[in-house]
Amino acid sequence: MPRKPYVIGLTGSIAMGKSETAKLFAAEGVTVHDADAAIHKLYGKGGAAAARIASIFPDAVRDGAVDRAALSAAVAGNPAALAKLEALVHPLVAAERNAFLREAEAKGTPVVLLDVPLLFEIGAEAGMDAVVVVSAPQTVQRARALERPGMTAEKFDALHARQMPDVEKRAKAHYVVVTDKGLDHARDQVRMILSEIARKLG
Image 1 (cartoon, rainbow, N blue to C red):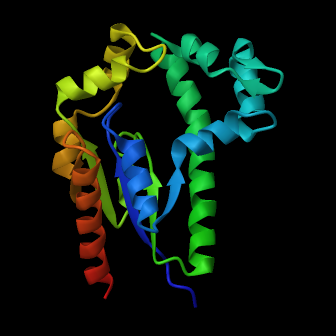
Image 2: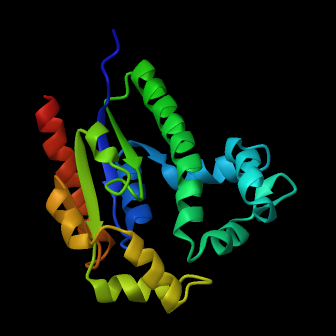
Image 3: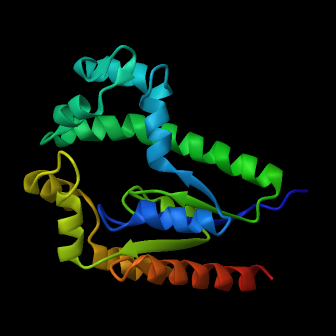
């Protein structure tokens, strides 16, 4: 009977370096599930979320695909609209994640990584064997975020306010990867985490 994979949950607040850290795990041979990529697929033409979003936010769907900028504008400053959107999208992403885990188990994959941006905020840590939080000083985080196309200080502050504070995430983590000291330093931390997990798995 196939053994369930050891599940690492990767999370971190906006602009902390989570996507790059996920790539470092992938480079070490870990199979990665990316929640953002899953949402991209769900929002695309014919995606499972597109038709449902059209029924609530008709102006945010064009040619059968979700216009993410229009959707973002539709929920900006509207907590009730955002809650409706999350109630619709989170179960679809969870279903994608579960399908990924079933496939990994069937293949006998020993370790997988679930890249979940709002892992603590949606209570997904309960399904993880270990949680890795990606962190950097707030000044670095803010500077990185403001370099992104279309990002403003107001938008960053709104996104940042929705996320659990970094200090709380680090306190809840099994492991922390610090990303403000260069790629080699981050890679060393990833390798140390995987070595420790390998020892646990025997």
